[in-house]
Image (cartoon, rainbow, N blue to C red):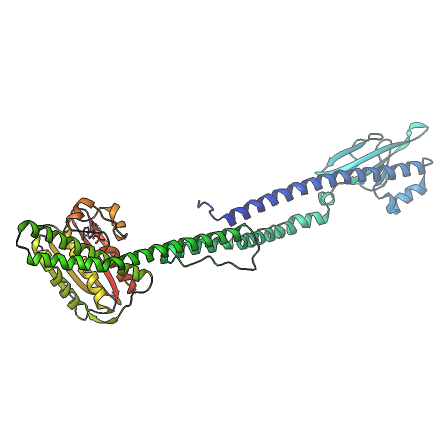
Length: 451
Ligand code: ADP
């Protein structure tokens, strides 16, 4: 059986059950008390009737009182028997004449499955055989005990009240939990849409209860986090800007040094300077691009792009790198694979994926690039048979500055920003990117872009 997980349902079930038990207990108590009271009442009434009749019987032939018993409602529970048990006058003659007579005692007797309260008194006239048994008896009805109204309450009113209690309680708890639902929805939105600007909607007219305070506190916390993130982004953006000019100077002067120097040692040093300066320059360019995309400042010039042409350009840009590792690059592009996108950004994304496929590819391996139609999208795939990725790294490679293997990546001058940049570019175009990879077998990066 499925476990009940909603707090609303659990609370509703809990107090409806509790209420049901309470109502049943109260009814049983009321029933028991009214039963006792009824029995006492009936007993007193019977005794009064019996004693009255006993008073009025004066002779062995008291016709007057016999007539009164027969005709008068006042004595409806009384019957008279001779000493030998022979019936003389009154009610219940067929039902209860077999019950033995006991003088002056209340009893409860059952005849043919029916219960009676019985009270007998013997009226003497001189000798014992000259007397009468005066019997008062009343049939105890169960509905009489509980009362007709109590019965209606049990059968009709209680289910209705419980139904109201259950629905009312569920509605009230549902309303009370509404702010929690809003908190959950906002948290999910922030997580799924990566939008730290979302806030928990708060009804200003809502009561100032704990949940409103919680929502206000969470919103304040989100303000603070957003502020910190903005400051950090601003810092990255400012720092990258500041670094751009000096690094261009270092690069230019390093290249000049490389040109003019004849000395081997100096050449080696100058080559090192140029290579590191190029790395820093790429890093700064990526940081700046990411900062611009993050703060929605990146302009995109969308135009109709022939994906095949872009792939060819990207392949040409990475050809030298592939040749160093003797990697074969093959390309397969469907007809009419056009997208509306920013050419420079998409080119840099595809180039990045291809150069990764080469960097992490096998010596003399292959890189295969494909572009095809998939529903209303264009699917661009970059596949290699290189080192691949283990499951633990697959989700993390999109995180900024994440590198699977620091030592190995250093050889390539990696900085761990390539894939996060590619992802940001693809998402900026409303597309999707994912990877399928197996350790030591290779990886396949797939971009889906609107055509
Ligand atoms: P880097 O500048 O280090 O290459 P990326 O963001 O491009 O940074 O890649 C992040 C990590 O993902 C890399 O450190 C690398 O280990 C892994 N990676 C990227 N592309 C591939 C690939 N084609 N095959 C195997 N691993 C890859």
